[in-house]
Image (tube, rainbow, N blue to C red):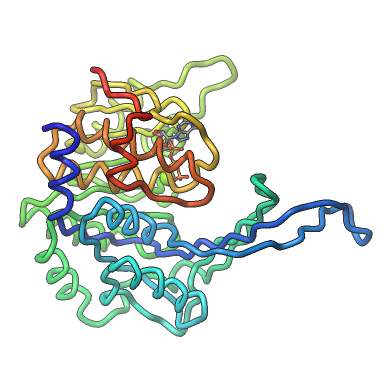
Length: 330
Ligand SMILES: Nc1ncnc2c1ncn2[C@@H]1O[C@H](COP(=O)(O)OP(=O)(O)OP(=O)(O)O)[C@@H](O)[C@H]1O
Ligand SMILES: [Mg+2]
């Protein structure tokens, strides 16, 4: 399939995203002096903005591709939750199955930015068990309905509490029964078994952790082949895509490295959220019938677009197709 045909096919897809829903908040300003109170910069605030983060950013990336996205996660009954709901409504993301729970705070990441330089990040969240879906009545029936209405499922795990082994086991069984692709962006720190999942998209560090291998020492090469062998032995995903930051991504099947795709980025401003773009685009392309390498190439191009934008961002089909992005060659 060529790129335009894949992007066209994405428009008729429905994709379900389950995971840690967040609000990304940006405070933009300028620094001209150091505070007399402490040795810290004084930010003169020019503007503030909000966008969807975490699993909500995966859904936003799907919407930007033209797919119909729905979202399951937990949002607080607070101002941040209202802001997030407004963003999701404006982009036609169905969040009617999200928990709106007055007992928790909506997860917010505030990034303070002086011109283009991030000064600090301020995180707000409740303890992990607060966000879990397990306490919800009729969870099984709700998941079954949601999976019945979708063409693929993405689990976006930021280890904030939504994604548990029980949830994973349920989703693996439901996706398997319907022959659907189940893709997972993992956070290995909480040691879930992902056996039965179709696609796993760890970043460089997460892949090492999933493989149970230590960080390479200074001067030592990244053990890509050993990682792919080990993740395959542990979970046997149909496809493993390891994102390698500035080095692009590696595509592996059956424990073997099949392709390494150099980054498609021309300029890099902000890499945050690029992993969300990768899993959204890969899953949509695979569900549209693209081959693994076509899907990875498209995801790599989409990631190249979003890292060239400030803040958590998305890529449109027009931007992905723009001639500034180099063509993939195998
Ligand atoms: N510094 C960079 N230069 C060029 N391309 C980049 C850079 N960082 C990321 N990318 C692109 O974005 C993709 C995903 O990036 P990365 O491996 O950093 O994922 P990640 O750590 O999951 O990101 P995040 O958690 O911020 O969403 C890469 O495969 C690459 O295509
Ligand atoms: Mg990531």
